[in-house]
Image (tube, rainbow, N blue to C red; front, top):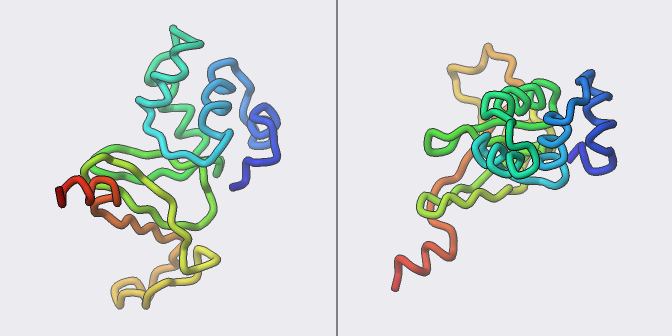
Length: 146
């Protein structure tokens, strides 16, 4: 993860973002360790310290962080999930409890393909690939067997 050795303030400045109290609060929450969050989760957490912060401000801030390369975005079950681990990796998501975990990617660079490129994409210049494995996590799987 790119963000481990830098303070949130330094990261925002390094990416040309103005340091506002709200932006800093979002950065301190989502960039301090690898996590998967929705804008709603961030809003609920940040609102404890900043009761007037709007959902729109949180969503726009997360979008700015994504455009700067501080977060990645993907969709699971119709929800936009922001991922603070920006290194190449895949995900597994539990269909029952919604848990999301990072999986080591079989490729070290985004340009390396884990599987042969589909024929329809041979003329494309592929910049990234995202895979999400869906199923039941061990805990939910154990519950369903009982």
